[in-house]
Image (tube, rainbow over all chains, first blue to last red; front, side, top):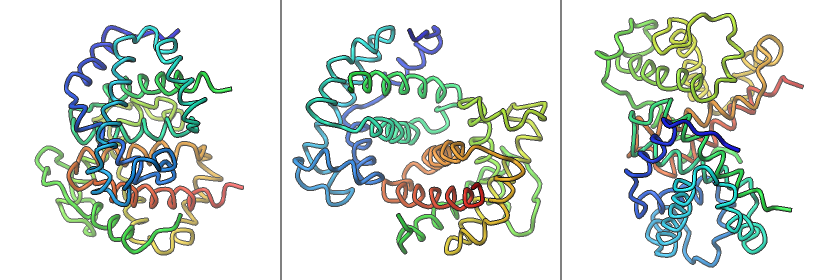
Amino acid sequence: MVEWTQEERVIIKEIFSKLNYEDVGPKSLCRILVVYPWTQRYFAHFGNLYNPEMILANPKIANHGVVVFRGLEMAVQNMDNIKNTYADLSKLHSEKLHVDPDNFQLLADCITIVIATKMRSAFTPEKQATWYKFLSVVVSALSKQYF
Amino acid sequence: MSLNAKDKSNVKAIFAKAEPRAEEIGVEVLSSRYSRHCISFICLFILLLLFRLFTVYPQTKSYFSHWKDFTAGSAEVRKHGLTVMQGVLRAVDMMDNLNTSLLSLSELHAFKLRVDPANFKIISHNILLVLAMLFPDDFTPDVHVSVDKFLAQVNLALSVKYR
């Protein structure tokens, strides 16, 4: 059972309240597809992923970026029960999408980098520590239904 | 995963950028090799990187049990941060020959410091993060992948003498 302090809850909600999903969603996906190009295997059906400009212009990527962040929002709204909240999503990623769970950490790292470009010096070490804890719980929950 | 010409040029360009924040940092020029702006960039980087490492990944402090002060203003943190950054900048200069040029550093980390190489990945991620914070418009996905590849090569070169 993950314990969150009041301060940690405030930090996570505050970071999310400032995010524009239409902006950070596609940027995070673009970053993982460029920095770790083997992840493109999961998006072969999205069409043109040839270079960063084309990835960012791809409407399926834009849409899916928002989907990812709406998924993260579910965890923000259920911080005391992320494991159960993500049970179905975890099964989906395992049984239907067949995503190697190592990729969850790669996407988490890319999301963190994009948020750092937005928040800059406001992304203090204390906020980073809380953010890191939150994403670790998310990654763990998403990996739970893999057998 | 080797560095191509574009990767090398991306890495050199991003590390050469300087932040004109000397007033906030106020550190003496330690070496004539670096301009004042470059030193202030290094110091800003140090403050952002090393203190961040100790806060977010407290297990990294286990290698510095002999230090008294892990706060941002600590002389020990600043001095060691400068050492680390000078090492990284040296690696940028010697990008074409990392295994040879980092050999003595690899021996130091392997035989004397005995740092678990898993920590190289942690520090690499945080170098990327600090670059993203300092240069959000320049740290594009293309530059990100180049620097990530470069840092992976540095980590490999540092690990060469481990076993």
